[in-house]
Length: 125
Image (cartoon, rainbow, N blue to C red):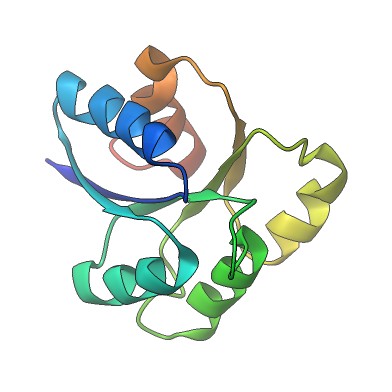
């Protein structure tokens, strides 16, 4: 079964690393968005199995994007994993309360990304 992953990150390099890590191992289809607004549209249109969401982005940050995803019936149940270089430890409770399934710190080991996604979401296990 192929898992569809939406990567929402304003940094192209970060999107490419995650995309390569997932597509090279197989079993993943990847969609990319460079910001929250486009990410919301793609989440509704593409119905991904999981969203990898950057926290620090211009215009619409990760928390705002997550809240918008959770307020839309079409996207409210899609698992969201925050991926960020910013230390989110102090905000973990707030992010989990807002509906995130997990937090993955950057930099991450690209070879471990597929397993981390499955571990955090329980999908594809």
